[in-house]
Length: 560
Image (cartoon, rainbow, N blue to C red; front, side):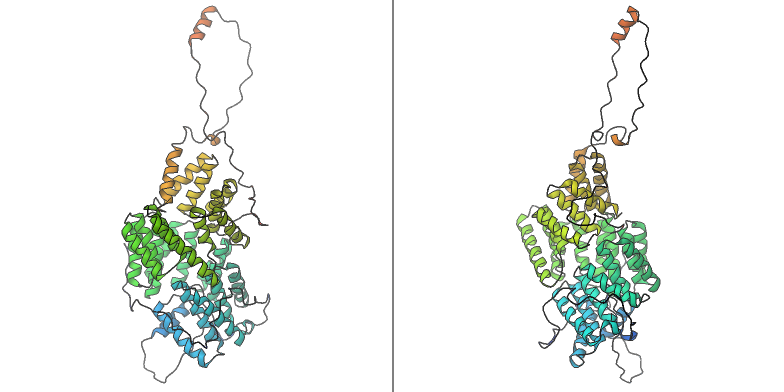
């Protein structure tokens, strides 16, 4: 049964106020690693905890200036105070409250340009706004505000909030290696500061280091109880394929959430879990509840569109996708909408969306955001598979070795005619344990191409069983491929059968009488058993190293 909470404030958040032309931190983007990396060792500890830590990855935290007007009567918190309270709790604020906080800090730093904590808060708020609105231009403003904060007060002198802001910025730009460096630097200073762990969880997950992500999640849960910890734990379980645990934890997070933005995020997570289980009706109900709770939970518009497409409610799905792209213009949504159009035979509309996808990726690149993964997925299926391979090899060399990158690289290699090499990466993605119908489909198709029919059948069956409508284009192809393989041979796969015992040495036989010879001629011989289709096929060695131009063998830690 879907949970529902009515919003407590208006859904329209508006954009943050534009900085004045004299604003010194509105400069071109230079990338998340443009600021010099932090020193390997630190001699001082973080100070000014009241102005301190940034809860990057969830929203922002940090010391926020409070003004005492001398009135001792209790007051209802305003939008700035609500945003500050959310940051302190490690929870998301509503976009309208976030907008108010940005305006408040912009005005403050105009007259206090050397206030390092306020500059760090403003920079991190810009990161969160850009992430929640897909307006990547705000990343440049975030970078400059954070740099100015470090100029006013270096990180070694206690300005860990700015360092964590840079970690959040790097994660948002998909520069997970830089995010790891910034986060681990703060962790060395303050290992018991809870707000460093969300950025580290995101960085480790993006790099495919599930062991480190698991440890960071556990530490975060020990240091910061409540809904934020439950949400992170549910995501960890989801990435490991532990669906029942993920669902139970996500439900607890939704039950305990109180503020609209936090509740909507929890309901959105339940919708994603339902969709991945192949339960689109439940998914629609959860996404609808998330949008009623907070109409600015724009990601639920796209989630709702996916679920509606799975229900063949295509007109509603198209409208939901168009609304999602208007509110939250992410390249992934343009790809999904284009594929839905293509599945309906609307090739012209599909090409329009694919062109928009390229434009979005190019615009994001100018703002320092790396959208190579979604671009490579598009190229593999709708463009140039060789270009997809090159994009993904670069990701792999940059240590971006998550299950998503491994799956995409394996599929791109297959589409480029290199199925044997692609098999290794596709298998790595599946071995993480994540329950993803698309991963199983890709692996099954590659195995079928290599005539490894038994494993191919099992993986294709897993794809259609996990989520029969996981993609408007690929799901029908998965069923067709499975049907083409037919039923498994009697007795199970040939390679799993025990070899027959050796035949005994022939013994001399007495001469037969003429009557016996005539009887033997009348008795037909039993036909030899037909060999299994897989018995004569040797599977590629799972330990063979792919010929990727990387010094390291492909490996993905257990997890997403």
